Length: 167
Image 1 (cartoon, rainbow, N blue to C red):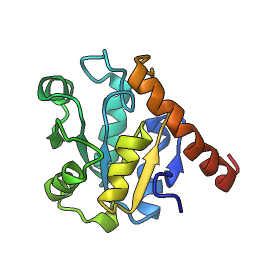
Image 2: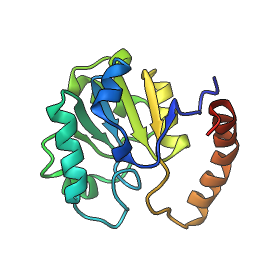
Image 3: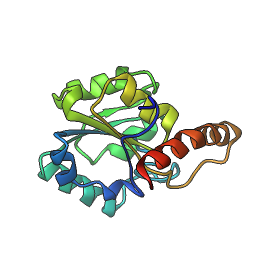
């Protein structure tokens, strides 16, 4: 398996169900915020996201946000969620993922991560040896030069994923 390939590629975050996670032996989910759960410029979660998160937690899935964004942005976005939040995580470094597992009292065998970037979210999940790494397309992609370059580099990884999974 390519170290950077996701285990699962979904069209949106809410395509993931607690039943699917439990079927895979997963009881904890690490979430990215920007472009995974909401666009960068959205200051607060919408009702759809809050309902999805509530369904996850009521179904026994622990949640934690791990973001590379600064503390102010992420704490503002997550202030009403009542889940652990780890800002400025420096993904793909695995430290934020490990802190999230400690917060949720989970293990790498029972934890999955979901994000929109292969070179931060998926790589961090792999480096932390999480059981499952889930990729979703960006909600609204940034158009700065660095992000465009990263998205270009992601294309061969996703071509291999699609060929392997026939999607």
